[in-house]
Length: 113
Length: 113
Image (spheres, one colour):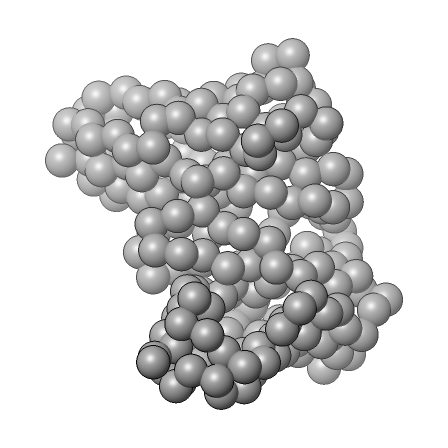
């Protein structure tokens, strides 16, 4: 059974700092890995999708990397802003299902002024 | 197309009552998913449809839960004889085959009192 872990569970940084969020998964037979953002009481917004054959994806100030063999992904946020404050969720789609997402418990990020 | 729409946004019900939620996916997406999220946790998979066929159900989906997607368009999730443990955010998502374009709705927050 696939298990996804995210570290740290919570993080507080001052505005302007670069930061890294970590995600690990137990079964390397994944179809893809996705990073989502969730604001309090709201649904999820897709940030980046990395196919199993890819090493990284970039969107603006966000860069996500994938090391399938070691079962790890990182989300790098450059020059953090207060508007980045949210919970960041990592999720994988297994090769076997190619459909449902298995989520980690998230990293709650607060960017302070 | 304005994305995935879920109704109602909030539902408060008494224990033992039945509730039904609706999800309207992105029209060109053939896959529709239901997830449940409790406080401080990542979303957990409940079930998914490809067109009108329900292809997988999680063990979390007890006999009191039923989901339908008539004609492969909108979907409903019904919970019969609600229990306090059913209190959660119920999230709907849709995607193309292979998980491309995974888009979540804003969710329905259920409170059972």
